[in-house]
Length: 176
Image 1 (cartoon, helix red, strand yellow):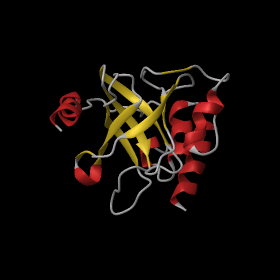
Image 2 (image 1 turned 30 degrees about the horizontal axis):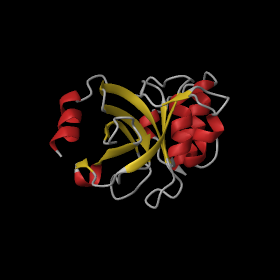
Image 3 (image 1 turned 90 degrees about the vertical axis):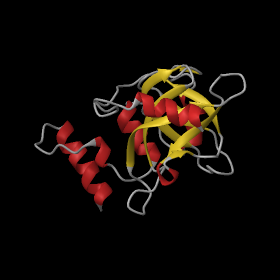
Image 4 (image 1 turned 120 degrees about the vertical axis):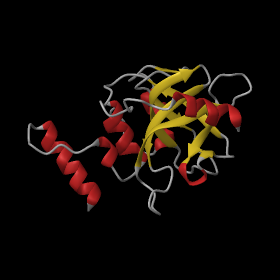
């Protein structure tokens, strides 16, 4: 019901209505969240986004603000995962904004803003990453394969906070 309310509020806000729902109030799956946050109009399971973007949106292997990062299907992510780059901190550390990763108040689905994503690939090519995980308050121990980044679309105004914790992101990445 909450997701339905948020979707209706987004529709009203876009139609000139008075309701103003925050992107960060979203609770649900990563795909609708990434689509709304990035303006990239792709549907289906997260792992399918990379191939669906071919010929429709530019793709690459360097993070840029507003790009959708596509996590590959894996044993830990049977449907893959998509998130939106909110800040580039340095060449191997970025922040992302996404939904349905960590538990908040005991449930999954919530949006998280400016979360550390660390490139741990041996060739520094963003093919393998670690993601900050709220439940452990640090980078998780899992390494996730990436397909790459999809560029284009619009960037939601709430994609990043006014004062993201760059130092925290660097500590998350390099201290663990």
